[in-house]
Every structure is written in structure tokens, then in C-alpha cells.
Image (cartoon, rainbow over all chains, first blue to last red; front, side):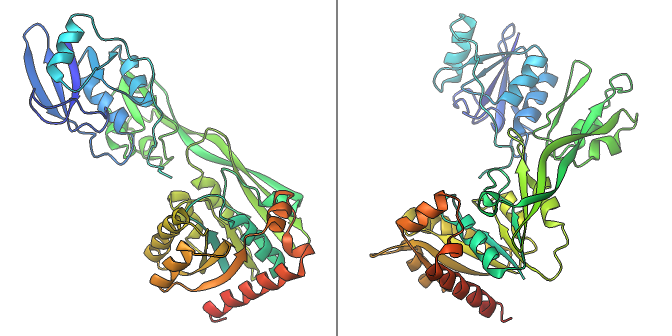
Length: 121
Length: 278
């Protein structure tokens, strides 16, 4: 199983990024091999629609699960359409959240926020 | 001359100033670009002469023709599309109707359909032509409504543009063709902060501009201090008054019944003309 986590820097000691769509990197963690892969988020600097593009990127990476503190509804729509489950991360630690997920201790994220879509008042 | 009336926040008195200026100018055209909450028509109570629907183009995908090349998704600069399980997903509130996807699709699988996002109403009130834009609830961008509003031929009449609050895209669209920007400001620190936002905007657009201080009272006025610091002309001071508030909330045009305010707005219009050297 492949788990994706938005992270601030490209190492495990870094923290979880509070933004899903504009996170600088994603950790792709493969549970079977314990392989860690850090990928640059191509959507991080998008003018708009970052969540959609970032979600598409993770779909293309064939991840099964995303661990995030929060997520916009467009990104969630893309992830859900691809059958990816979204879980709510707790605190900043990447390792602790992966462990918590593997022990079924994270809840499914079921509340999503609207986006600004480039129209900041 | 085309005068845009704007402010960094809502409730400073844009509509009060716009409506009274248009009424005073007589043979004028009042255009309400505050399309999320147009309220100038409540004062003018115009006899409606014409309505037009505002439509934008939305892409529609024929999934039987799509071969999954993803050109549309890669080229969409707004990231309004995704490709999941051999199907293109379209996010309408992110789409800017640029048409690139339908143009680029090698399989001609994308066509465009009309989507109604709002309406424009035209009418007359005494000698004033009144045009108001209404954006449908839930739509994310009213730019196409504003664009259509400002496309109208207005001849040589004075045009008063009642802008949306703030300094975002919709305001930029509203002031684009204005000869003069009138910034309405409240006497508070918050008011001065918001004045700064629109001041920066009109400077960026290289527009002639000046300030109307609204709700003025005894004591310090941070917005006035801001004008002094930045050498912005103050063309009028509208006093804080229960009488104005009452008439305004009853949707009355204050210069119609009050000679004192008629004189105040006449002076304001004169001052604008002086600034424009007409």
C-alpha cells in the first residue's frame, strides 16, 4: 500500500504541511517495503486549482491513502473519484502519523473546506 | 467623464456617493458593478426597460471521443480539469472559460456549452439611466457580468460606476476604463487601512484619484491623516449623521429632499471636474 503525506521538507524529520495542495513535497511511503520517496509537488506554485493538480499528481503516483490535517473539496473530489481514502493526520510528526495509520488509529477525514480559487477579497 | 467610486471595504458609502452623484449629474448613467450585492437600484427604483442574461462557456467532454491524451489537463492554466479512471473531470467554479481545452483537443472531444451566471437589468429613473449587474448565488466570478455592464455605449453622458468593495479582480475590472477614481473612506484605523488598499490599486492603474471622507465627526480621522501623508486631495466631507443614515436605510436619495446635501454633492462634482481639469 502507498501512503502520501504532504510534508514541509524532503526528510522524515520534517513536519506535515498544513496545506494539501500547496505543500512543497509529498512523502510517498510504501508499507510493504518501508520505502520512503520524496516528490516535489508540481502544483505548489499554481496560480489556482492547486488542490486539483496536486490530487491528480498523487492519483498518477498510484497512492492508496492520503494523510492530511485538512483538505479542500475539489482535491477531495479528485481523490475520492480515484478511490483514494483520506485520513486526518494528528500533530506534525510524519512517522507518528504513519504508525498511527498502520495501527488503524486515524479517522477518515470527512469535512472539506472551500477554496479561494484566486479570488481573494 | 467616467467616475469609478470604490473603497477597501463594504459599508463606507460607495452607493450613497454614487447614487447621489448620478442623480445630481442629471443626464447620467449609473452602473452598479457591485454584482454580488447590487443595491443602487433600490434607491433609483428604475422602470425596467431591458434584461439580459450573462452566459459563460463551459467545456463539455464527449467521453466516447476522448482518448486520454491529457492535453486539456496539462494546458489548463487554472487547473480546472482532472483525468481519473479514463474520464475528464471538470471543475466549473475553477474554469475561467478561456476555451483552450476545446481548441487543443486533437480528438475534438470537447465542445462548449452556455452557462448562465447572472443578469443585467437596465432601466431609467428620472433622467438617470440605471444598469445593474446581478451575479447568481454560488458563482465564483462575476467578471463576465462586469465586463458586459461596462461594454454599453454611454455617449457623452457622465457615467458613475459603483464598484464592488475591496481591491480584488472585480474592482480592477470595474475601474479599467474610468477617467477618475473616487475613494470613499471611513474615519477609523480600519478605514485608513482599507483606504490604503484601494489607494495602492489606483496608483498601480495610474488613475487620477481623490478621496471623499464619509461619516466625519469631531476628533481624529486616520483616513484624513492618511490623505495628508500621501498628498491625496480630499474632495468632500460627508458628516456622520443620523438623518443621512435614516434616509439611506429607507432607500431615499438624500439630495432629493435635502438642499444642504444637494449643495455638498454639487460641490463634490465641481471638485471632481476641477481635478480632471474639465
